[in-house]
Amino acid sequence: MATVEPKFSGVSPAQPQGAYFTVSIAQGAFSDAASTAGGRVSPCGATDFATAPTTLAESTKISRGQLRWKLMMNSLGIRSNFRVVNIVCTYASDAGDTPITTLAFGLVFENPDFVPTTGTTIDGSTTNTTKAEYIRDKIAEALNADHTENMTVYDPTSGAGLISNDAVTVAQVMTAEGEIVEAITVTAVSGFAANTSGQLATDTSLTYSAE
Image 1 (cartoon, rainbow, N blue to C red):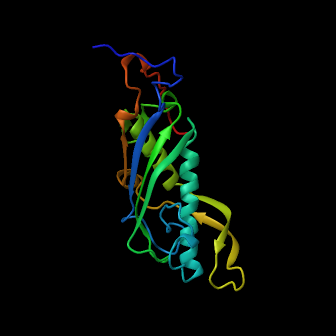
Image 2 (image 1 turned 90 degrees about the vertical axis):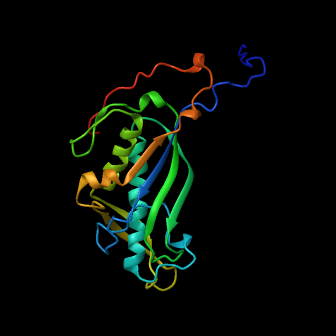
């Protein structure tokens, strides 16, 4: 039996190129306090909920979650372009005062060889040996960060417009770095790669350290 690649028709047999990883972040143990540690991580905004947050403190937690999402995207994009697919944000209810419990999504990296395979976790205690572990570590870095940024925050107390421009600060979602890492699951989807052996390149990924 032979495999014939359809070059004449202009269809690339290597599509889709890149590498695909699924991500799940279990957030039940993350802080939901009205403090810089609260807010967890989510791309959802105040107006995405069926019932808007009832206080500025609750709305600010949503903004903190969005800011961590932005930091996470920035961290993941250091080595390679990527896109997010199949995102699922799970809450106990669709009310804005309800904290997110699980965030799941897919990541498609444009240049898989730019994603390292070896390095160490954020606390330096464990050696990573796969791309999935590197991605998990970059997500953990974003959730372990202290950062302040001006944001547009939904404010149910502000009157007309319901908008407040505030400096929003995030801190670590948990005090133990290792526990943040343990809450994150990243899995490589091997079937996303090219289908024939001739299309598979040798992995030339570099090692990495803190970036």
